Amino acid sequence: MNMVRLDKQNLDNFIRELSAEYSVYAPGNTGGKTEFIPVESGDEIDFSRTVTDMSPKGIFFPPAEVLFEYDKDGVRAAQTSHRPIAVFGMRSCDARSLVMLDRVFGSAIQMPDDEKFQDPYWKEKYDSSLIFGFACNEPLSTCFCNWFSGGPYNRDGMDVSVVDAGDVYLMEPVSDKGIEIISKLSCLTDASEEDKALLEKMASDAESMMTAPLDVEGLGERLTALFDESIWDEISAKCVNCGACTFSCPTCHCFDMQDEGKGEKGKRVRIWDSCMLPIFTMEASGHNPRALSRDRVRQRVMHKYSYYPENYGEILCTGCGRCVMVCPVNLDIREVLKKFIAYNEQGK
Amino acid sequence: MANPYIPLQMKVQRIETEDPDRTLRTYDLTFVNESEKEAFNYLPGQFCEISILGKGESPFGIASSPTEKDYLRFTVNRTGSVTNDIHYLRNGDIIGMRGPLGNWYPVDDMKGMNVLIVGGGFAFTTLRSLLIYLLDSRDDYKDITVIYGARNPDLFIYKDEIAIWKQRDDIQFHLTIDNPVDGWTDKTGFVPTVTKEVSPGPDNAMAIVCGPPVMIKYTLPVLTELGFPDERIYTSLERRMKCGIGKCGRCNIGSKYICIDGPVFSMAELKNIPETV
Image (cartoon, rainbow over all chains, first blue to last red; front, side, top):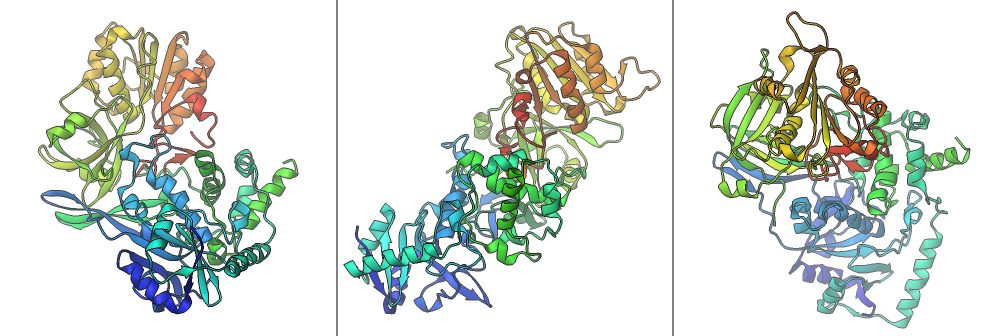
């Protein structure tokens, strides 16, 4: 299917039309911070920030989600049926993160068809979702999506790609679901040859604004080889283990399950957890397999750049740069990775 | 679709206190719903998450053998808030359970082989499951040797069964305690030392080791020294498993999740994983 255009004046109509069938989420401003919020009109959308403060993972994997409720009669799964979700304005990095998370929540690599390993709460929301991606015309200094085969105009994980081209949004379907929705919506018109040429130029301009990528070929193996080296002490020395990187990260997905109840009534809630926190792996006996800050920093780095790639063939980082922005002690993951690569090349 | 987070309802059928300090108790649970019992198939080495609603879940190795059809058995050390509440349970109480989770000891590969079982303290749970399973098809296996150690005589679990196993002439059963105690007639010394002393032959033999991390750490090299190849040494590891289905992210060692890739691993597998024991 061909490219279509949406006049920005028509954004409101577009969102309203989409809302008839979908619960629509888009970047919004919530008290000075930006995150993905449910919207019903175009006015509520805030595109002022290239990267939203909070990633969109919470739409499909909420910070707190009721798994079930219980009372004296037994346990009842939380009501999960709702309208399908459409997300408008998801950056390339974030759209890719959902593909990465789906590999974990959608199944287990060991038993891909076994329902016992499929997360019903994730699947119920993600499988029926519609992702309108949003290309980046002005990547930030913290952006490094191009390190990991991403890019400002990358379309992985999108159903429809959207480009801000001045007075119009240029849209192109990426998936079958995308083709279907584009053909259904009424406020779209066919794009011209000029539009296509413009989009190509904008894409190449955006890509040229990215800094040169680090060569991450073989990074996982390098990290494994350096597992016991003292470089981890050096890297983790300033980390305060606050977990801000993990909560802002679009691909971090560790969680805890906690019971909230009184007497015979209550619920079990899944909440975001963080491998940066000592209690994450603390056992009831007091034994902690990751007792030191170094152990925990190493776990996070290894999980993203070694363990997940070993299991799924792709690095678990989209280069969105949120961890770089939020870290209270300026621990920059890009510098960390550079150090590891340099350290190895010195033959240590 | 099936929801792996919803616990099954189980009824406490029998409670047995294992030690004089009453920190170790064994629970036999039965299924409230018969259809769930039919669907529940497991092998020795697997574990379950036991729920005390309002408190949370903790993982426990299954101590019964699948050949014991009437109940699921768990032995619980009172150490945290969930286990504390479990210790307050009474017969007839209903609790939640998810499982079976994880993999199992290679019982099929053991057929026709000599089996060495090395255990320590209250980690003998899944080893009991394994031992009962092997004994229920005794002819399928050759020599069975068990080395079981505890800090002192009180801390062995399943004492009545141990007395019976020791009487049998088709099991070599060695008990050991850390330090001498008056009236103790079995072995004295740490499990690795006793393993060396008993010196079971590695030929056509499989070794299964489960116990506290420090016991595993010092027993594995002894088995290697005795000539057991890495592919025929298995151990069961433990972390703070939570979801049990490879999602929540806390029980990994390297790229493996103990809750789905384990808890049973061969030495050969562990050698490729950093930071295991």
